[in-house]
Image (cartoon, rainbow, N blue to C red; front, top):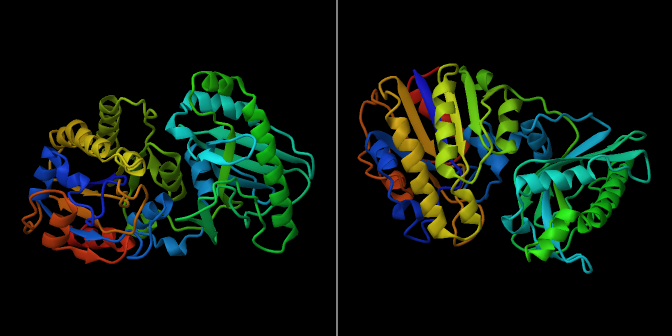
Length: 426
């Protein structure tokens, strides 16, 4: 028996704002699956925590994220195949951002989502290899997708520490994990040591020097000159968060579940989690902006991956971004596109007699709030071998939560174990 674990990033909304995107969307494929399924809903972390993407994915895969203390910077680096030298390098997740050059006030933390990956690569090249004035300091910079990047701060002379604060003011740190802040001052934050060690102090000195150097280099970059002439935001700063300086010791996913897993994902953080947990990572082309074409590639990869693993984890990013942008109509369109060009075609390509499909979300991203929330997310499990189905007619928050026999599961990390037990998979 094979399993497809399909995670639609941020597809859920809050039922405080009905109708939800799932209720509005026309989803023939999802609804067909729902009618053949058992279902329920769960809190990705708990009823009070709005999850970050990495914590939500760990939880869905059966790991209590509160037991995993790893900075997202490392996960993003693993996702693009970049390693760090433990002890002398600290890796960060970074955003190219738009600031007012004179005041250093942040205008847009993501350059208005207008920065292309090609532009970001050119900007990263201008920063990669920058030498800092003290401690034999240096910086490595890697653009990933759009405004996202990985930054590694290193020293040839001293030990460094990841126990430092973020320069991205939108996120605070709790241990190695960042927490999105409801309110923050829109200025690049100084990197501050979170302990009294020399290593943390030196790391912050290097980070703060690089932050200023990056602004000076990016402000004058030809790409930003052209963008300014075209009246679009400059990518003239980098915001750093989620530092890490070591590789964690963590149980592989095959040890946790006794099954082989593979992953198909677009973003480095999910790929990095897959590599960290020992999953096979299927390489797919990066998003092109043409969802129909992109989904076709992901469908081909899904069917290929299923031949080599027990569980194919497929993470589709589509609905999350319009949720963050507050664009409900675009979120609905994204859901409908995934349904038409991935789910309906998938159902024509597999046999539910020997393959189970689990569909869920990693978290809710309601357009009304433009952020991840702690709301319940729906889940369905479709398989012809089920003893009975739940009478769910549509894949929506209300249908799954009120009719699903899986009921309300208090933590995401409990979900897979419960489903695998029901399906008698081990």
